Length: 217
Image (cartoon, rainbow, N blue to C red; front, side, top):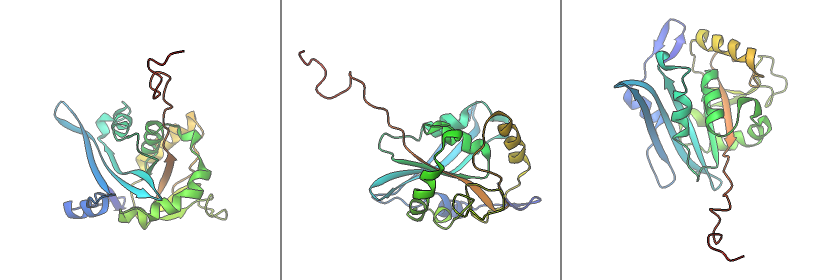
């Protein structure tokens, strides 16, 4: 999954995977593992964690993996939508893959072109530092929205020192840029894109408002 170099895969043990992506549960921390199978085959799976930050509930996708034979058919978006709760206030993800960012934006109530960079600039640091997940808490904010003098081409991301093979994500990014305005910029080695989004709560309809049912005119 991760590469120290393009030809050297890094394996994560079950213990390290739990430590890095699934922190132990407490009164304010809950970890999740959700998967999708197709005809008995594991096609899509994700790790997520919820925690409290300044009285708000943060739901963060700590890992999203889709088998290459099951991409571009909406599995990732459907899996991420299954994580949503009406009590969530913030959604977040760090990923080196543009498709993961697109799926997260769509699943959590917006589009990649409508992501509020200003919201992330103002709120991102505090939310990430409150995380019980080490790789989120330790990530360093990078890009021109945080450092205007940055010349790497990155607009919004984090330095995680995780080196992943960029050939396939770069091909996806080229296609994405042909169809829409990609707001996050180019991704240097050892970095990941960052999305932090306020939850979109539906307003109750007149049918569901308390006291409305059967109220005399």
